[in-house]
Length: 224
Image (cartoon, rainbow, N blue to C red; front, side):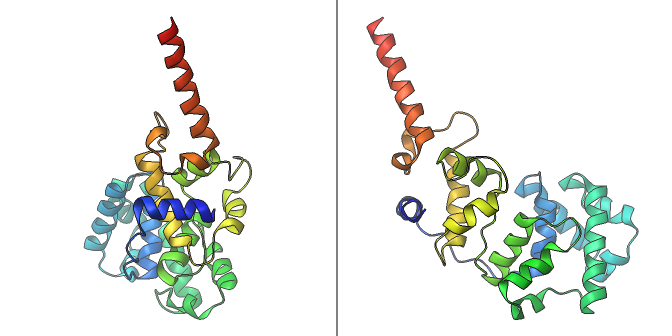
């Protein structure tokens, strides 16, 4: 993993430092991002905040109105119900619509608390903990699942967060997360991966096998 990080850094550079974001805003954005595009997520979030400028208004609004506002993200009824549950839970336990208290917790306790929220899984929790608080947590999305499996870092079974977490060099979770997503989006695509152009081909059994197969096919065609 250290060599993978080094080669990705050489190819892509380190991503810009994360912009400071309100942790609760980030949590709601991440919930809206599931199974949709970044564009749809942003459209849904902005529509929600235009209609309800405060989180208190979101929590108290009729569920149907919240669902209507976040329609661009899809699954709006399920998401509206979950968002309101989460907001009401935060207010009931903390007395305010804020997650800033997580900065005072040990990372393990902060993780446990965020995972206790309704419908929040590890990917969502880890995005909040990593991007908003800088905790050493490694969120695994669909691109990272695919890339890590092709690299032989995860066998495709069980929890990829559990499998990959021990491999991430300390202090490099943010950079590796974003660079692996970039690799998955641009080169290590689900279909027609561009293995010959991949900066980590030397580390990748899947890519090496694919390139060998293409070479053998060309050789057979030329011989024929």
